[in-house]
Length: 331
Image 1 (cartoon, rainbow, N blue to C red):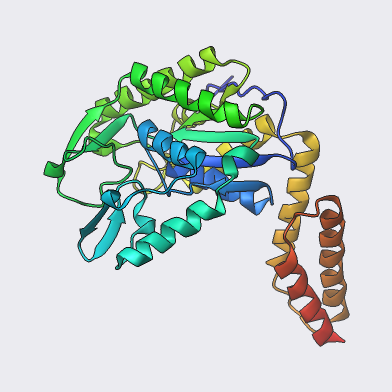
Image 2 (tube, helix red, strand yellow):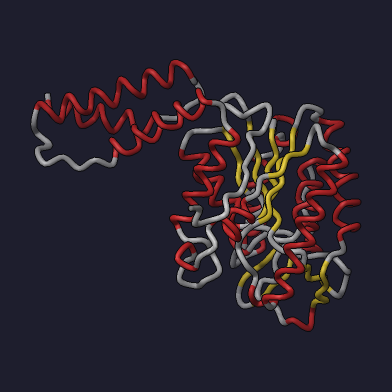
């Protein structure tokens, strides 16, 4: 007897491995997955503009990366003691305009060539509702708690999303023809919009993603993160206390299914080895002066050296230095 409806998560082809370079853009769910990718030492950049929810803001950010441009000062606004950019998340805001510029430059310079190097771009749509700055009609990435009267709010039509991404992705593929794009729709509900409007929003995003996949079937992939939480994990025990965000257990479940679908068996084994090292580093010994603990530290160093030989770009410097320091103290 089946007690739940299983969501099919077919393996993508070709699957990803440690030679791939990944860029994740979109909602906070993209950040959740991206942090797990970084923990396993995969080469990826996460939300260089901060968390973005709507397709237009994500597209505008990708366009800036593609054209290697910075936002103009017309994009800056001072509110409640801080300078903000209408193209960036509030994480970039600062008490001074110079501080805001520094935060923006640091992030964009770090990912200046990201679209040229990226082999797979992950885009996670969160909401089809946008807020347009009334002065210019620009879709903002974040309202920064400014008064609502300064914005027009509307739900994007499917055609506008599809047309925007059709031209954008074609421009990106001219620079990087081999790059694939994986779309997901965030399972996080935007209940401030109302439950019915949230469903309309998610449906818009799902249909937009599907139309884009049909237009470019060889280059666009879709992963059903939204469906996994809504259908397979259909229970409030898989939500956080706010009953909106997925719980840690739910995110871990989706991450496991995502890994199995997207990565090669050899990559999954390497991920397991990286996690073992991380768990070993977090171990707190009962007898830190013992020979057993010294052998334990030596095992960590050997594991690090073996992985670093296979993947020279793995950064285990801090972990290895910590182990060697402890070993020197024991000698």
